[in-house]
Length: 262
Image (cartoon, rainbow, N blue to C red; front, top):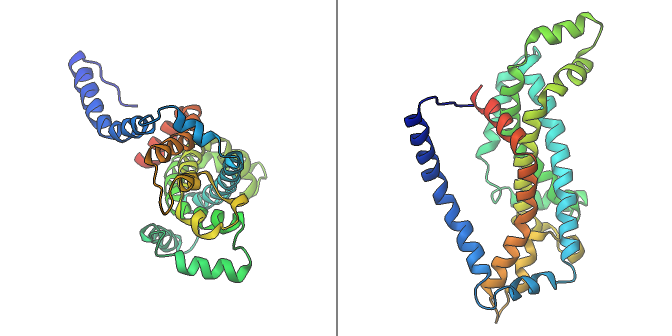
């Protein structure tokens, strides 16, 4: 963490931090104010009156859990291989993986649709969870690799001297030390999976499988477009993310700092 000892430096840092945060607060304030416009709290009552709202939340939780599990396992194992194992051409593989960061979701929509249809995944959780996980893994591997690279090699060598193979050294030595970066990966992946709109809209046509990001569609029609209720639905859908971040805030900050600045 960055620490400043002088009073002047602390004031300057506080002012700078406040100025950086203010632009991000305006959209949130506007969203909450807009959700209370018109009929006020009745907008929220209209959102909670949707009978399938608990189902939408359940589907979002299931998809987010699947994505987090896939991303966490794949990212930590791949990062360990890139950071600690002697693999021929691993730098080439790593940069090829990072090249996937340049691919926007909308460009992949057509091949993903064809693949999901041919494999029988269309209109299932996996049709959304697998592409979301694949889109997150390159960035999370980058973070986790930098973090794991900072773990002393002597710990792994000591485990091997004691008779542990590579997987056991990863499981018993490296994995317990990756708690901060794992927290950062969980938060980032949860936000991406929970907020995604395009993939659920395209791949989940069954109303019983749709996610909470599609709730605003209930207030948008050919002859109706109630933006106050749309904003209320957006506020309601954002609450679980805020709670999750507050619970993992300390791990998120430690892991993101170590993974990004190593």
